[in-house]
Image (cartoon, rainbow, N blue to C red; front, side, top):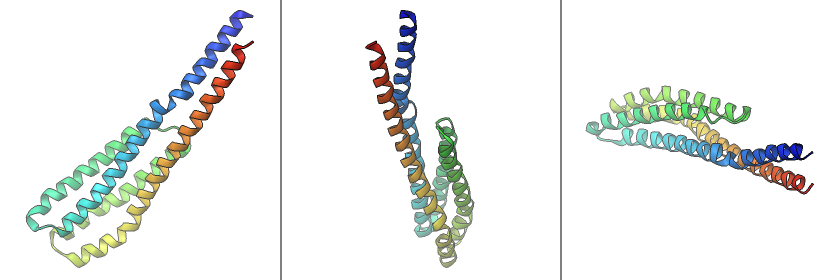
Length: 171
């Protein structure tokens, strides 16, 4: 009898710990990575606009920073893969990757037109790709909210496990 209670209490304490530590193990790192993705998308957009409006002597350096943000995005996606919690999380990541690839493939033509000072053409191309990058930003924001929901669910599971452990310890 006592051995069974000890085993049950150990199991319930582990359940409480797992649910309570989810935020530190997964939610916080996930939110940090998603914030990095948001920042890199925003910085890329800003650098593209800077490139369009820059003096010809500045354009090569700005184009190099756009490429750095592309590398940072791919690295952030790879890091996030280890943090995927559920199927919905995985779907968000797949959507973000696909939207980023779609946007990224348009960056070189935009930068090339901008470097050639073909302002009308570059502005037309940019106006056509804005909806896709807006969708990427919205998807990242929704993904952020999903991780907040996962954290709340984990908190509720921790509270429930704690209540169960307390109740069984009274036996």
